[in-house]
Length: 255
Image (cartoon, rainbow, N blue to C red; front, side):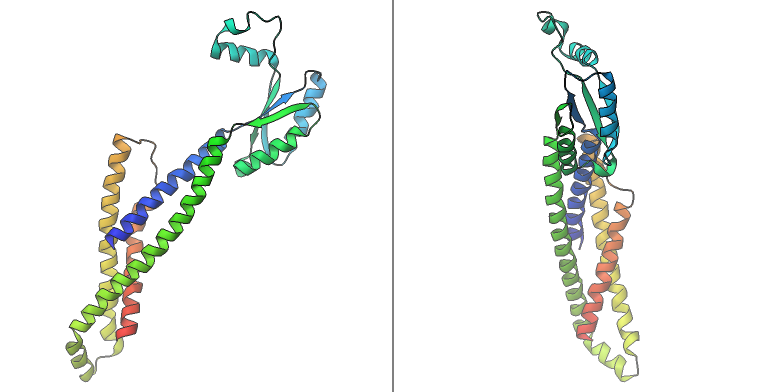
């Protein structure tokens, strides 16, 4: 039980952190819409309002040619534009989507909508990393579901077989108890507790091992590693339920 819950805990920690990375990248990725040179100030204001009217859009920030040039010079140095007579960089809008609309699919869809507006030469977003992480997150969810199913069936099998062996070892005592009038409930109840205790101790050992590994990895290599507050206490609780239901299966089958 310890080994099985340890395995599923590691997979869940990976899954939590992949999801967190995806959400972080979702919040950071913006759509950049480049504006046609011919658009005047009034047309730019109307276009900004039109983009902001989209349900998915939360914020629109206008960047003039001069602002873009200044930022470019700060980043790459002034000498790059000294040989040019005019500023070749276009004005643009930086578009932020709402937190519920910031997936890779939503970014692609909204980019296409903005590109179709008159005055927008191109709308782009740099979401290659986000797309890759989103795919990895989907795979990790599937793997987690399979691992959890494997752990659940494995734990039930281990506990129920352990209880079955205990019942077999005590079969003469059980027969004697029945002869002197012990009820089925009186005989079965200790086995329920025994299975639950097996699960709790297995989950407790797994939680302790995972906590130590998590603390070391976070301290030495990955300070951004994250798990929810409820994670470690939930491991022995999961063990309790698996142990209890495993004993129920064994008692129902063999008593």
